[in-house]
Image: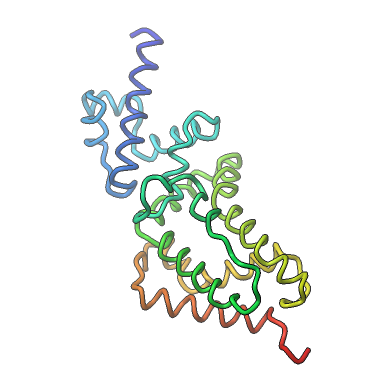
Length: 227
């Protein structure tokens, strides 16, 4: 088989895997589905890739080289989000906080509910597990971090800075304040989610978790009116 034909076959498998991963999620996808979508036999697929994890890693490498942004978009989308908001961080960046002190609790609550509703889902957690496994490659780990958690922290930092400057919040590095708030949101359920123990939260559970996180944050950072 010529080198060009070999590369074409390989790319066809990658394209099929990408589409299947996006349609049904990493955990629900199978090598049978990928082979069928590509139009080749499963035995041929296994000559190129020995598992869907190997396909995933190859797709991530392409994304890291700037050749396929859609797979990165997929990793950070909400399972319930409309397709036009898939871009990594687009939904996060579009959340605009008014820098008004009296709205702080309500806005932090809304943001926390959005984060847990969108990103503590079976599909997103499955993607995160595979990202963590792929992050043994430092370059890939940095890519995942910069497109996901770092983007959220930067967005929160921009919200907290004017509140710190006005003296509503105690004087602190906005980045650290953002890390603490985001950490509080994840503190009760992140490990259970990543270890496949608790992958789905009810609306009531999300509301309670966020309420506790916001309450602790306010106690730690919001200045009392008498100060």
